[in-house]
Amino acid sequence: MKLKSNESLSSEKKFLLKISITVIIIFAMAFTAMAATTETPGSTVTTGAATSTALSPAYTQVTVSDVTLDPGTFATGDEGTITVTVQNTGSQSVTIRRATLYDKDITLLSATTYDSVGSIGAGNTMPFTFTVKADVPDGIYYPVFSLEFQDTGFLRYPVKLEVKNSPVVLSITDKPDTFVPGKKSVVILSLSNLRMNAIKNVIISPNVSDIEIIPQNIVINSLNSGQSVNLPFNITPKTPTDIEFTAMYLNGPNTHQVELVLPIQFNTDKTQADPVISNIVSTPDGGNIRITGDVTNSGLQDAKSVTVATGTPAVPVDPFKVYAVGLLKPDDFSSFELTISSESPNEVPIIISYKDQDGNVYTRSISADISLAKTPKGNGNTSYVPWIIVGIIAIAVGLVLGYQYMKRRKP
Amino acid sequence: MIQNIIDILTRPDAFFQEKIKSAEDLKIPFLFVAVAGVIGAINGYEIGSLTGRMFASANAGMGEFVAIFSIVGAFIGVVLFWLIGAAIFFLLSMAFKGTGSFNRTLEFVGYGFIPYIIGSLISLIMAVYYLPMVQVPVVRSFTDPVVIQNAVSSLMHDPAMLELTKVSAIIGIIFLIWSANIWIYAINYARNLSMKHAVITVLLPVTIFIIYTLFITFVGVSAPGGY
Image 1 (tube, each protein chain N blue to C red):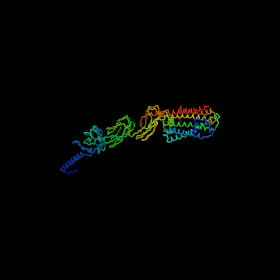
Image 2: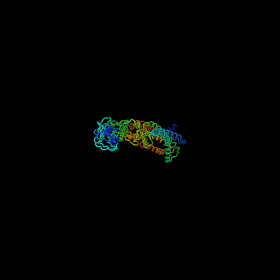
Image 3: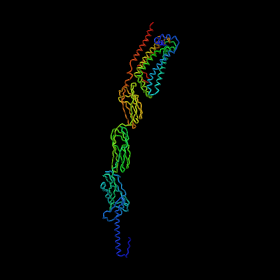
Image 4: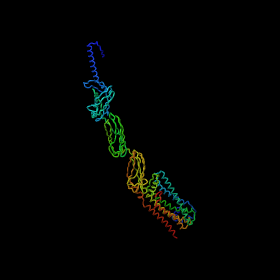
């Protein structure tokens, strides 16, 4: 309303004018009060007590611009941080008395951090980070961020905090049918993140000392939600045992771990090389004994560096103290030949040695009876009959020659 | 013919006394030597078969090669023995101013192979008896000479083989003495020597041969590459 000074106005008109101005001011105040209680998106700004003496349009421009939770999803018992960033979108500086976060379920561990804050300049942002502990069961919680201004009014903002105990799963993806002592086997584990947020600094390590496991641990920087990763381990067991794999990871600042037990039990590898010795024949060889035979690989894998030798108490002698067969593929066979001293006992062990593709050495021993070779067959069958015949022949020839000699001597 | 053979064996003096009057003829003596050679070849085949079995694993054709080599070698060996023996007698008799041609010496020495034939037949029978008892070592490869040497040595040291060697040697010596008796008369007439010189001419090399045979049979075996 535009007022003009007019000396000609009457006193009634002046009174009406004052009334009008007063009504306008009252409406203006009422409108301002209504505007102060109107919610802005995501935040609530309210006037203080009814005793507010002045209206400050600056603080109405303070809004929550960003909320960050670490971890994104809490597990029960997890500690974490909630960072609320506010921005002064107005043209004047706003003084903030204190900031806090409160909830009846979520524990605030840093209660007094923002008891005294200060001013936030026009156009500036200010983060408020609170440490909380979600010692609550699964669910969605809304702790309230509260910003108390110096002059009057509050900014309240409910923060969504989700607590969910979705697991991180460590499982066995692949392993050999059986473990063989000294043989390197590949075991593939799988780590799956079924949580709603990424986990970080994952370390998967076996908790065993007397077994050779390569690698000793696997480190993954980050594993996103819903992501899986394969973890190959080369295991060379020596004795039956249980290997406990532990996957440690960070959910926010909280360390969690999952465990997996891999039982190592030895059994015969159904596909391994299986050299079989057969057709063993022992024969005398001069002053020694020659042992011949065949070695057949009846397994499903290659037998490498196959050698055949005699063991104690046999006394090996040249030329075949050891017989090197070499590579025997499945279903292949090779003859072998060994020479031992005839002073060896009747039962001698024949030892076959071979390697698998990892270089592990396997030995197998069978007993061979060489008694027949030590008792030459010819001795038992020979008789004195030929010598008797020779004697008779000698006598007959002697008689013939003697007869001739005597006949010649006669005149 | 039969009567001639009996005369040679039992009355060599009378036989050669009559034979010296006839012209030189090498056919009959060569026939005797050839028969001895055939029997020797059969004997050689029997022994060679063992060697062939020994090498059969190493080379498929080795057995046949050894058998043929043994047959031919044994036959030629008997013929050479005839020729060399006659030559030795001929040369030794020259020391006693012996006369007579080499062909006559060769002819008469050939008649002396009849006891050798008998001895070879008996040795063959002995071989048939002993050889199945011999355990033949197997040589699977020719790459290692030591293996071959050991195999040959093993064969020669087989008890049945040793027995056969000794029996054959004694039989050979017995019939060699019988042959020597015939050769004495043969040289006596063929080279026109005295009986004393004929005895020396024949018994000197024969005795040396017998001593050598006894030595290698009972003292040492001269196996190829053996010990």
